[in-house]
Length: 64
Image 1 (cartoon, rainbow, N blue to C red):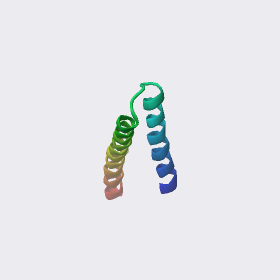
Image 2: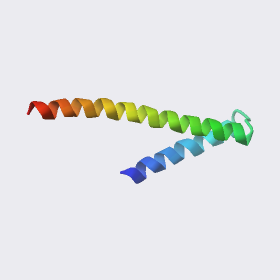
Image 3: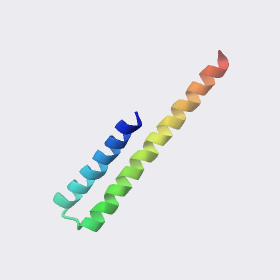
Image 4: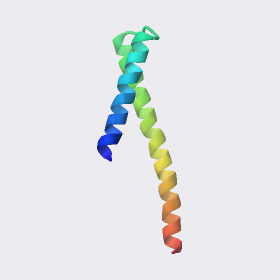
């Protein structure tokens, strides 16, 4: 499961970099920074969703 997540993050980073360079005509340094930011944003989003789901699952387990 971790390998799939890593591949998705890599795809997001590379995709964002390519779009930034090709479409927005950013230089490589700016595009790399944007790609890192997009990847970290995705990690934060997934972490928040996981925390919310984990909290919900924990409450259900305690009731049984």
